[in-house]
Image (cartoon, rainbow, N blue to C red; front, side, top):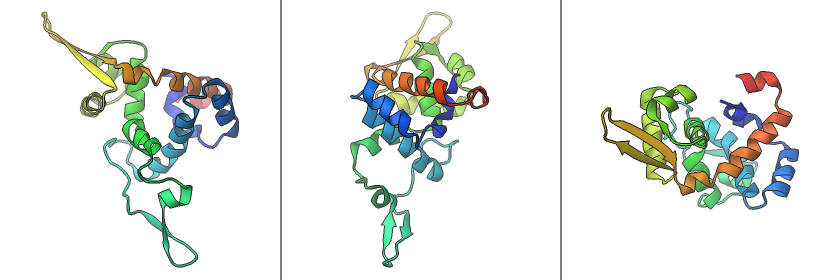
Length: 180
């Protein structure tokens, strides 16, 4: 895999956001929110459990004695479509699978090897991505029976997002970070 696995290192870089908005104005808002949101959800989501979501009631005390939710701190409405998008694709395993499927249709074991996910995790992630409409499943019933996975039109629409993040990673991440 490429430097994509180090998505968490991308957030907070103003040059990345500027370059992205110049090159991909239609998706720049999404990637900026994805990178910003990833750090927020990373703290409250266990990486080995992509279905775990942060609690809506998490809050921090304010100086006036009231509590401030995470959404209040960052000026986001909890029902924001950006946040909903991040909840769908913002886990380590979902992103890894989507990225690998950009190369075309793959069998389960090919995805397992390329993502280093265990079988149970990969199966759950593929089911989730299928239910959300990002991944399509095709079963070939000739002997031996084989199951193939590919991106749907919805999944393929994320390609410019992945391309720009990889471009940025190639320019700004050191080689040690890319090799991990």
